[in-house]
Length: 211
Image 1: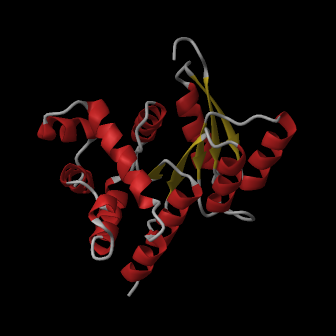
Image 2: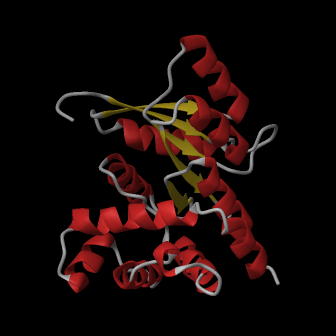
């Protein structure tokens, strides 16, 4: 990336968390983080400036438009913008709706500021970061998808193994060591897993989880 400043928007209605995380990110001179208290504020800024940040950290549960709807609006107009959900929500329906809306990562606010910052860098370099609890939900969803999908649309054996390792709480570096591959290779597999989540049968898979 050279000396390019990476622009980040943090969309979060909880003021203390918003200000603290934004300050943490801005301590790194390679990043410029701007904070927004709700969806409407960032959508208005994008409309005014005719530009969009390179990365958006998006909460889900906010007054007015929620983060999922906001993500969909932004991705429709700026498909190259990277959106990572940063939320307290572990609801499986919201997780998959966020991914369908175009989110490339899903982490929880319970993670430390350092973990969230590391997830940002992971996202920037082609990864699709997710907290371990989110990975466990994804594992559960694929156990349902496999019952109805053709082999071409299922996860490969290695993708299954990597996803289960992430779900157990292993970090990307540990997963790479366990599988004798590079960290970048693991990130590529995670990206493919996220892409496969967005197949047409996803809604049926989500519904089957609720039964």
